[in-house]
Length: 136
Image (cartoon, rainbow, N blue to C red; front, side, top):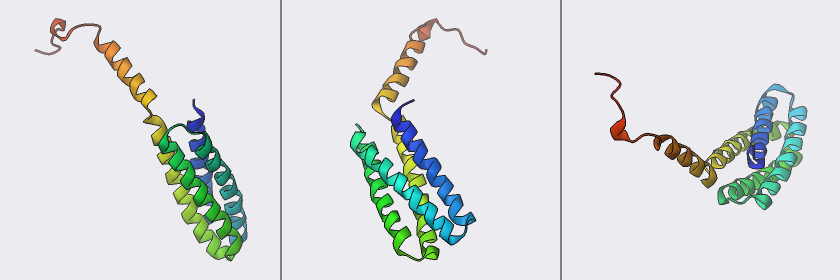
C-alpha cells in the first residue's frame, strides 16, 4: 500500500467525519472541529505537494493546502454559525479532493503497466486458433 493511497484516504475519512460533525454538533463545537481538521488537512496538503511525483497528486496537494488555509481563516474569523456552513462546504470539497487523489493514485503508469502485463501473460498461454468453442 503506497503512502499516496494512505494520505488520500486519511483526507477523505477526516473530511467525511467533518461533514457529519458540522450537521450533528452545536455551532461552537463544529467550528472548533472545523479548525482542527482543516489544520491537519493543510499540513497533509503541504506534504502531498512537496513529496508527490505525479502532477495530479501535486495539484491535489496544492488545492488541499489552499482550501485548508481558507478554512482555518474562516473558522477563526466568522461567527460559529457561518463557520459551520463554510466548514461543511469545505469538508465536501475535501472529500471530493480525497476521492480525486485516490483515483489519480490508481491511474498511475505503474498500475496500468502492471494490469497490461498480467493480461498479456494470461492471453499468451494458448493461441486463439487452438481454443475449442464452449457452446454449439
